[in-house]
Image (cartoon, rainbow, N blue to C red):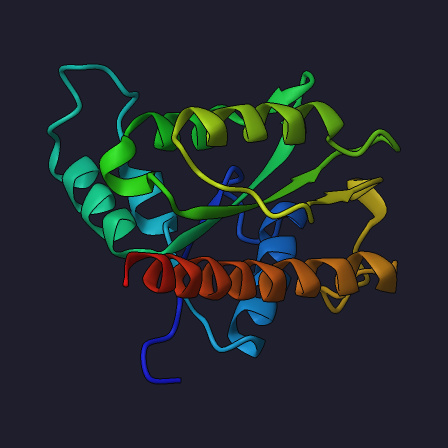
Length: 188
């Protein structure tokens, strides 16, 4: 693809072996399968100080915002803690503004230990996405029973969850391509 759709992935878990991180790796496969490219925000997210107006201009925040501005879409994933997204993800999102997000797309993933599988987290992430003027495709993925979700090789025990994660990446890229094509057509 001449200009692949660049997707920035933000993970609410700092553990690279977490179920959430693994789920986002599978979504990234779907993004690439659909012809997109992936930028992981982990290096910036790990370095961001707790957001405040005083911290807004730290070098890590500036570099993170610049990379986010270049992305045409995002994937956010978070484990659910106390019926909410992880603080590390929310902290990173607090560094973003409309300058980096308006009229872009975001795919959502949540994992949780119980069978409720992150429903509260997904709802809150959708609310944050609306607040940042992002579009969400109808697909979203909840990973239930995260403590027992993975095989030893890192694959998901439930093939349907893995297929839904891949499909989320594909749908996100196609949604962005369709949206951009329509906007170009409408502006002519």
